[in-house]
Amino acid sequence: MRPELYHTHHKNYIEDLPYWITLADQTDGPILELGCGTGRVILPFYQEGFRIIGLDNDLQMLAYLKQQAPELPVFAADLTRFHLGMKFSFILLTCNTYSTLSSVQRKAALQCIDHHLLKGGLFATSLPNPYDLNQMGDSDEAGPEEFFTHPQTGDPIQVSSSWKTGQDTVTIYWHYDHLLPDGQVYRTTHYTTHYLDPAASYIQEMEAQGFTVQAEGEFDGTPFSEDTDFLILKGFKPA
Image (cartoon, one colour):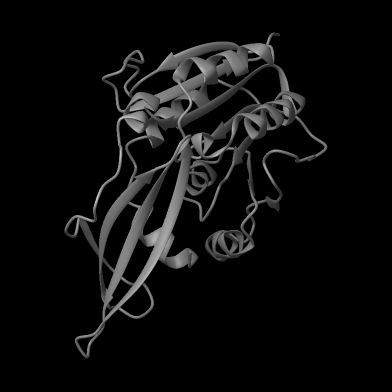
């Protein structure tokens, strides 16, 4: 997916930013964002003066991010096997990425995260409520849900979605209809696959790595339940 399209679609989602920044304020030391993408989260951190480093495996996304903040340190690596040669007080993984990893990938990522965290450090991540993912089933494409203007062409783009459930996963498709000046419509589609693991599995995996885990369900601190929108996990490494 083109990074400028991805960034324009997602940049106005800011409801979680105060939550992550509050967690950062409670730590003392450098910060690492895994899966930093085009910078929706890391750029506000950087602009606030935090010592933060970004990591992502998508070179196009990182190139777009570097255009926005040339001095921001970023690394191209897989979050399940990275080695940065330094430790952090806070590592975060946002934007529903954690549930796109299989249990094997999550365990490998947790080992890397644990290795890169200072004693007493914090790892935090958010994902869609696993209960909701398991209830999605299949969906035909509905009508347009969002509209935005393409940052390069100025053409309007309308966004719709659909999803399909497999045995252990649900795949969500985002359809971008580019409304061209001559009346034609050019469609591009981006999809993301989430694993249908229960919330208990995520918690148990983090505890098995040695973290003390707290689970919340909303970015206002609401405890996690089947009725919340998210599963937000905070893993504290022993001091």
